[in-house]
Image (cartoon, rainbow, N blue to C red; front, side, top):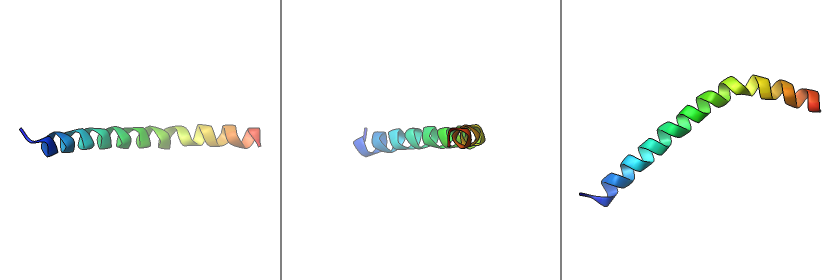
Length: 40
């Protein structure tokens, strides 16, 4: 068992989670943009 192997697994899992959050951000961005425009 390699520590670097576990590290890579953790990093790739974290990276896929970040990718998922970015996809959700793209969907939510228009709503947040409109909300920000109204606030300003």
